[in-house]
Length: 484
Image (cartoon, rainbow, N blue to C red; front, side):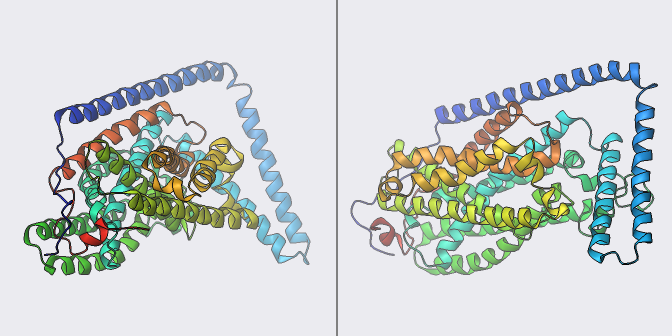
């Protein structure tokens, strides 16, 4: 066992009743706010339907049929005109033909979407918002949880010593994974409200809701296979977290290097599995919301945001524990490294954001730009730029200096801003594809507070079950004497 300096002492976190009651109160307040948001959304939607119904009953026999007939006639005439023109012009450029076919296909796609919504496959908007909020907060806090496991694994594989004295904090995040799995299972009854590819008949030729693009993806995007992947992802994550946590605790009890080297081997395997499972999670849970669109770097973009959120959560819990007189050995040098990670991954997030946005926008291909039109030009335009400011410009300017990254007081500001910023980023990834322009924030704030309370309960309980410092880790001395 390594020799440690005299100032080192084993510390334990006590999860007292006051903190537990505070977190339970936060959950209750969050649920009340969320419930109020649900009620207001339901009431507003029903009032809108009643008003629309009265207007509809007075004009439906006179105006709507003629309007629909007129629109249908015009559409048919346009298509017929395009067809005759293409048939009559033998020397027409092939690119023009392809462009015309693309626009016709787009019209058919939008028609299929409209029919699906009119057929009630997705239900009322307030209910879609409800399930979208479950997904939003599930992914946000599950992302922080799996970050904790991944971060600890990277430290083992890299033989890094600087973070050993604080690793129990991110290690405790993984304890939320079983809870997150249960919360994802609760989402199953409402998944068809979120994912259009789960609507009835979208993959069945001849069905009014048939969608050729979705049908082409049905081998991967189908409910049984989706649930199998969901169980596989969480099974792998929870399994490796459990193994790594047990090895970490055994290291405390037994000393030596046996469990340390087992942790390295386990971590190396986990990192490989993590890469594939995170890709599936990003594709399945987020990208398939906009089922007609895809990005080859979407999962990297998701990973970058997840990593910033994880470091932000780590700093938050460290500041909280130090406020209680614990973990004073975590000094400005450790915070400096954490601040550099937040700064670096904020830049990396921006790099992927720009790479995805500019290439799609510059190419101006309809099936690609349809993802950005409502976010960049439509209803979410303001939030689109707020997201970029909070998650790039603010941390870039704020954390540029050395002193800003070394002081826990200054880091506490960036923690609060980026915690909201990357929640907002996920909000923009989910809400436009689920609820369109029918978004809001009251329900969303309530759910976030409730999830924050649940996450806090789980993590603080895990922190209380083991010493805050892994006393027999072979690289603990290096961490306690870390200086940059």
